[in-house]
Amino acid sequence: MLNHLITGLMNTTVIEDGMQAGPAMPALQTFIWFFAAPIGLFALIAGIVIVATADRRKSYSSGDLTRID
Image 1 (cartoon, rainbow, N blue to C red):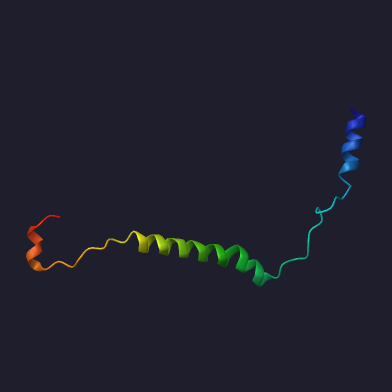
Image 2: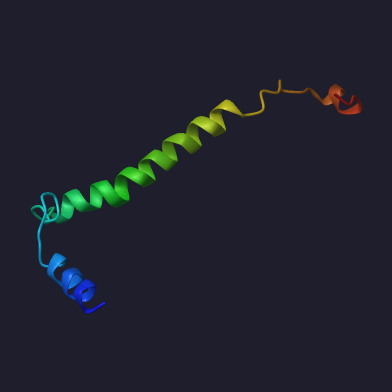
């Protein structure tokens, strides 16, 4: 059991390829990727859905109020 614990501790200090962080993103790029782009995509999809499901009724004259469609 002690051997397993020591082996586990030794493996935590080994750095493999792809484990190190890359360069930091600038604040503007972070804002665009994580705030502006998701909000923009949500607004675009919501707009498409609203336009696609809009009720396309003809305008009624006053004589049409007695009729149920």
